Image (cartoon, rainbow, N blue to C red; front, side, top):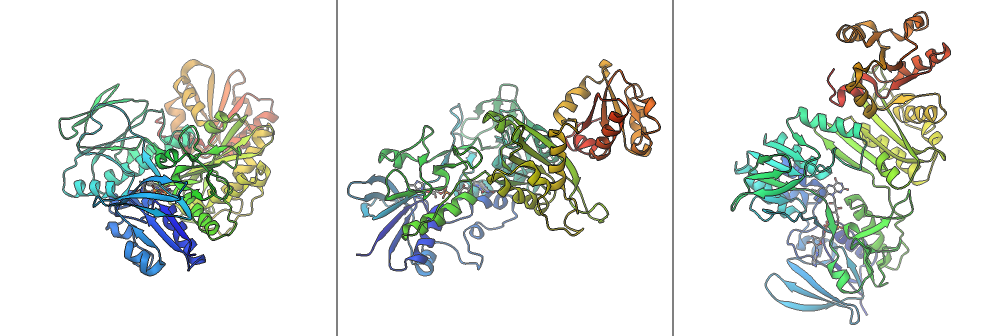
Length: 567
Ligand SMILES: Cc1cc2nc3c(=O)[nH]c(=O)nc-3n(C[C@H](O)[C@H](O)[C@H](O)COP(=O)(O)OP(=O)(O)OC[C@H]3O[C@@H](n4cnc5c(N)ncnc54)[C@H](O)[C@@H]3O)c2cc1C
């Protein structure tokens, strides 16, 4: 008898599983069902569609050879029946049927041999006054995006407020501020953008870049209500009321697993579906993946929620393979991400320092700044990488970075991902083989420098001052305890010495040996240079002269400036 595969949800995971399965089993029947009429689109492209980089929504629904992935495409090209505008309202596991309700009101049951739940997630909803006002949007699907873009292109939006500074909030903020020049403010409950994903200093760099591009931020602020009668007119927080004619909610997502729960499929405390590494639920005839499941975090081995398109697509293939009788395995993930912030990129994988500590690791982090290409190559820019390691075992727990237009950063993060997955040590980062030619990298690339610097730190050779500490130290710079020793060339350092004569001293690194006596011995010496290389050398030189109470500012003046700290 011909096998019937039914898949609920037809965007990322569902469509991928269907097509993979059908390629392996041309003889079987595959039906994908989605309550929406727009299916199989690139949800990750939504911010770029709103921004105008992608001009037409059909581009998000098209193949690379320009065929729109609608129900005709699925039927004719893939041999898959797509039932759109059709909601699955119930699963009957005993009789192996799903109950469907079409937009037309028509209802029926469909039999399955194997079922896939690809129902994704729904936006987390804040329970507060005004949340249902008009012009308050989520950005969870293409329909939201089309509605937002329509409002904007009709010239109806002058002031927008984005609630939430996670990656979708940041992408949407720049979409509105950049192309459409909308007065855009982001409100965030935590004290940094991308909370949990990157360190405070890296978050400051991203925030600063966005502020330079006219996006405003209010951090550590709680939204209490959305104001307006029919349409939203303002956002009231615990500190102010901001005028707004559009509000975009991006405060996170929750798994959409009502169907699964009602059918008695095992879910975790947060409602996520529990699956094994074959993406099978507690019912072996029902598979699931994407935004509605927990997967294994490959650093901790514990279940984790990593709702990303990259995960959903790979899991979809595993499910397709297994539906066809194969033995596909999805081992888990470390949450690799990258976000475009205007012309720069913010990326990471594994744990940030905060998350690693929250997970119970005795974690430390080291940040370095270095040119993305050979220092002598004409086009180059300083980028930043931060490594998170376990202090005792020296195991790599995570990496995050800022800078570069894209491949400069994402290539380096991706190179370290297998090390994180394989529980490699910091020495493996120092020795990581990197393809090198001056227009692309350095002979001793920033990734290797990051490993070396972290080794030096763990071995006690390098005593850094992290940017967060520098910010605090600079605020209390006149307390008489610290002395800022600038190891750059005089041309760079003298203006600082003249501005802060009591606390700032210029001694270029190559003069330090003979001018050591000028360095006070009764104060903590804060060593600075442009990126941290010369100040590290200076630290070693001074130690040889018995001056040990020194710290070298991580990422140097370059990092300080990119964090937006004004001297
Ligand atoms: C704005 C935005 C930007 C993003 N950017 C990135 C990025 O840059 N990189 C990245 O890796 N990820 C990104 N993501 C995340 C990525 O899009 C999701 O992880 C991915 O789409 C999840 O796929 P999924 O198949 O699990 O669920 P979804 O794509 O959410 O699809 C679920 C589908 O199920 C349907 N459905 C639900 N319940 C039923 C029902 N009962 N009956 C019928 N149909 C039902 C829904 O209508 C929906 O179409 C982004 C997401 C958004 C919203």
